[in-house]
Length: 79
Length: 33
Image (cartoon, rainbow over all chains, first blue to last red):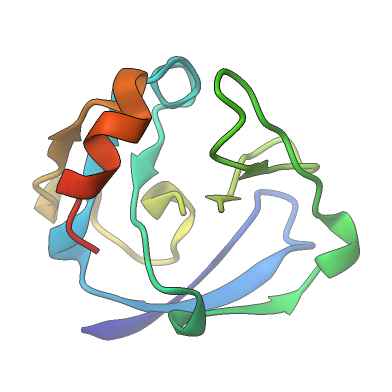
């Protein structure tokens, strides 16, 4: 397990996550296919939003279970 | 979260496992976190 930094394309949203990249998955749902999203699900306590909380939005579709967070052009995370 | 948004990750080193998100509720239990 290692700690990584990341964020959206414009740089307003930045975060830190501790994860094992061996757990990456490729989802076949409509939004992941369109966005070429590579999923990594981590427990909430391993994700730390550093900046940009005001930039976040929420988007749901289909069964409305997964919440995708994107105000910036690049979807950065789903919860 | 989207691994493509992480800094300095060489995507060529990853071996993503397939996940059937089209049937998310049935599949989520199979995903290792």
